[in-house]
Image (cartoon, rainbow, N blue to C red; front, side, top):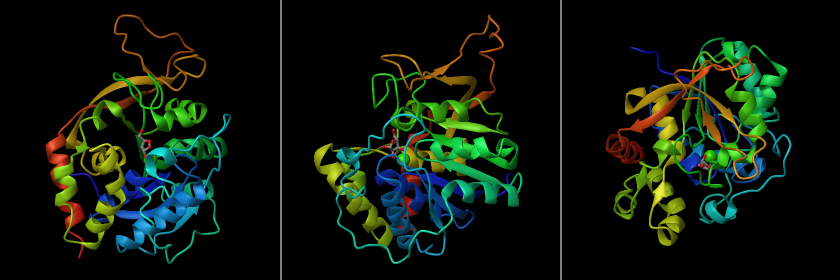
Length: 311
Ligand code: BDR
Ligand code: CA
């Protein structure tokens, strides 16, 4: 039996990041050590505000929230307000949070936590990987210092959502993602569109959300998406769920590179599936565990149960 995780969440809170925080915080076994935010769905400052809102609704107002990278490493930022709303929470116009972000930066927070509890902290990366890449640049031992990293990102054997080949978190900062995927983590798990495409909340499931303050909050931030798209892909909550319970998914162990140069394929996650040809020295990199199938019904039932379980 694995020990319950101590989790550091790195995110760009958006609707599904907020739902992932609620999913995790409903688990009495999970200790959320801290949250760090990164430029992605929204600006890192707004992501921090939204993370504070979610933590307060979840009854965890003392979890520190730190602001991190305000832009990708090389390219210009393109937020996703068209999808997550101007406020990042489905234009739900919620009151501001009671708390405020810490004075420490998200990269410094990540380094401090990893160094102070070597081998114990699980990093759940739900946004672009800029903070993680910056932390790796400062501390090359980060992959040994963390217990594991679970990333929501990539589209290995399915279409992307930001471009035909690339998923949003990777496409937002491909250079950062490439640095992270070639590092030698103790364990690195990729939860990409290959499986999140199965984790769909339908209108009926949305209507059933209720019975707790957290479920009401979830229902409200999802309302715009339900009105316009009649469905919502629970990308970040699924990554959180797999961090807590790996039996929800099955994995393929393969090295993954991020395409940085393609005119049509920049940001694509390219898995090396060759079995007969050895990679060249330049191509050689550690295998990551790619979630390729998921017990979606079990996950969706657990999602509703957890949101309803708040007092
Ligand atoms: C990912 O991109 C963001 O819009 C979501 O929060 C999720 O992390 C899905 O591609
Ligand atoms: Ca996200």
